[in-house]
Length: 443
Image (cartoon, rainbow, N blue to C red; front, side):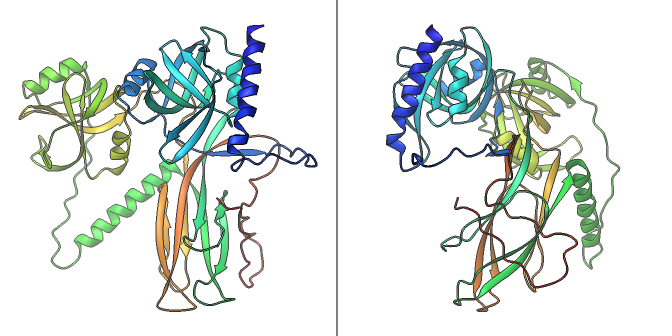
């Protein structure tokens, strides 16, 4: 009986929020018919930091803003569970329709438009184990709060991580264009400088195995370095055989003692991330008498300072998204006592997984843009790229293109591809004039 009562409150809160957000979600007219469920649900991937509930509580208490995934247990609906509220997250506003508390005393807020989660939460019972994915909002009114993206209970449909490519023309009325599968695309858009004229270019999207592609990139980098070394006046390239380190597994406090004693050794340990370090050294010297530039440094709760090389972008990206209180596993070399710091040079950082969908696809997208009479532009790292290409209609002016390669979480369903997605050119199509790309809906 109590469960039915709460679901009544949820439905009331959901519909009560609709008028306030009519501009964002217009109510369908009476003559409109329900639309079939789409085959593929695509939503932007958040890089959730895997944490335990107590670490999330501490991070929220410190007003840390982070996307997190954590296991907990449902405790209760508070007396104000269905109270309407608008919360802000950066420039965005979210209409909260429901809130619930977990056993770790975390207040979870559910967006009124998140119907699936509202339905799922309404059926939870006290003590039920759940996994929450969402964004820490901080300390709201004395409550450690998380804005919920989804609640996992173990019966969710399997999802996978994939990519999509968005093409935009900032400052123009041209609608963004969306690419959701590999292939060759010919894209046309109106010239910014000549009425009734168009610009045209080609986009090639290739799906590459992640491991094989990384090996290919390493080979290309080695060949480029060898070629550069062969130029007149260049220093000789010294080839050293790769040395595989053997890491000694130690407890964090044992690593601390070894660092204080200036014992130089390769170690593997786990500890909790405390925060950014006050370590200010620009370089550190390894036991092999080489200097390594420091790109990032963080402290752990036991008192170790972990320095991350500036020339390892993947490692830097991982280190920079760790949340205070999160457990980390570090492989590295103890450098000893440097001033007031017990320093470890990091080779690798992993974030011990708890559960949930893995956040990395087993493949990458290699995107090649071919603009007429210009050198090809290639990209494969997720991010936003601003590119200026010379106008073919009005040289030497430029056409500005914003290219965003982003990750999406894909859940299979029962319909078709996302509306407005471009279709690749058929490989067997006969040569002919470029076909205009169909613009997507506005983003």
